[in-house]
Length: 390
Image (cartoon, rainbow, N blue to C red; front, side):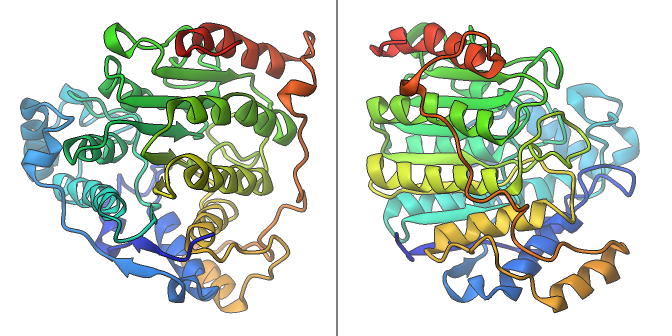
């Protein structure tokens, strides 16, 4: 495991703030950064702030008219009327929206550039992972799609194969849309089934188009899926596809909203399972991409109990100093949590479910199990398109 890693952080990213009643509370970013420091992880890797993404970079994914609309809404939030998805309940306009959204995108693009150049093997931007933003519109709390922009920048720099692995509870629809016909990008999304959750996309039959047919992969998991099924589904789909694709870089999105405490979704995954999948993504990067790994945050609305712990585990794994699940959380951080939120912070870096067990797919398929049904639907839809047996 490598210690050559960097954390992308600029305190100004906490200005990505849709207002006090919005679930995307920027305190989750501040508390994560604080926990990273409280556990000393920021001494194990470089902490770097990148420049905001400029217009030429934003145009790698987003239409010029949309960028202009974001700028206009940013300058005059009261004038946003829902056009381009701006000024809606999900994406209310706020002053400085363009600037802070470009700053978050810049951190992910900077992470990708550093990894591609070989400055570091791993780079983390837990403020990123805003995977719903479309080329021509905001969606699902996301203004600019930093994940897609990081991938597009890698392609611009000469990457020929980039694998994107998204384990947010919501479908990574914006990234899929950006590369729907591009065979250079393999997008894999594990998410709650579109019948029960926004954005109502990510069916297993969505496999890409044109030259990109077979480059989009979707595992739509039933509501209520817990640790065993979630980790089993990941290992039944992701490693085999990544191995066959032979990526030069892996970009992964680690939304923490799969957790059983998350208020906006219906999976039942623990922090310990999230950590297990983070470790698996790290291992896949070393096995198949020369260690090149860009790790992003994403959703997550249990902003005290879950998000800071999950993304601190992610930082520790990238830094080469994974945090042991039984680690006691420093009292100073818990006091800060109470001062900021009037909530009691968690005491340990575990939900008490480590180690997480799961059954290997090769050991057998249970036709009565809804998770196995979901996995098989994905394998049947996409594996033959990639020359693999379902």
